Length: 113
Image 1 (spheres, rainbow, N blue to C red):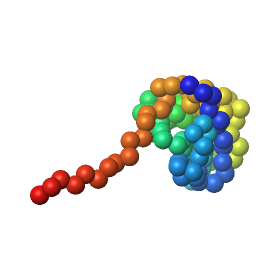
Image 2 (image 1 turned 60 degrees about the horizontal axis):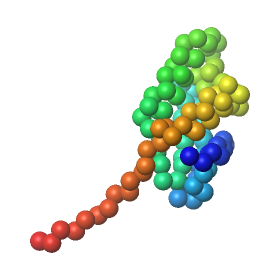
Image 3 (image 1 turned 180 degrees about the horizontal axis):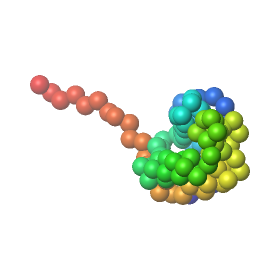
């Protein structure tokens, strides 16, 4: 597989069909106790394994870090700036072939009556 270009964006990602085939946009937002991560790639969706891996890492880091009234995303190093450790982790994860599943568009089929 060709090396993907991972871009962290500070706005909601563009629509997948507007991205070049080798570009992945990652948006990380924070709202109180919630972390919103959107990862978009043209023609693909993240595999369940990757979504579970990222969620598990966030939960573990949240348990390991002292809160002190800060939002979860800030405590685990995702917000307001993505830490170098997170960038390495996410980029290594997204470069793996099995991190992606083909996006199969739905097709409307008309059956004769």
